[in-house]
Amino acid sequence: MRISLVGGIDRLQKHYRHEAEKAGVDLRIFNGAETNIPDRIKQTEALVIFTSKVSHKARNQVMGVALSKDIPVFMCHNCGVCALRDCLKCVKEGMS
Image 1 (tube, rainbow, N blue to C red):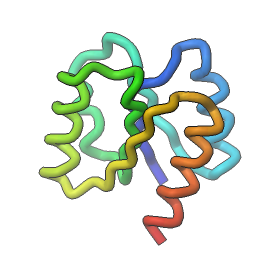
Image 2 (cartoon, helix red, strand yellow):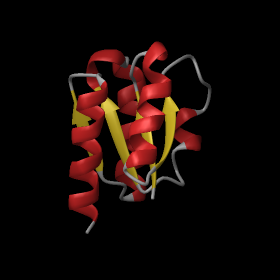
Image 3 (cartoon, one colour):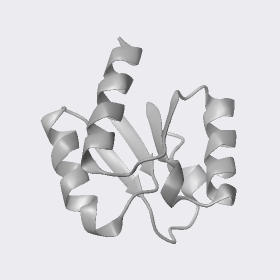
């Protein structure tokens, strides 16, 4: 399962990836000044947005893609590893 994470903290990327591996998820992380994020999330099965660490513009762009491609979106205000673990659990439950 491929999930895209938009937002988050740079120093936690290693921990985010570790949690995703434990959950059996291929995680793509977009939390910096990456370009063309909307184009890069089109192939994802679900989208997790950490709303406290993403701009309104970026959130609106990825939400537009998610709505047009019928990609499920899970938003969380917190951006810690435990928050990601909870979001991955919700994604897996929602997809089954």
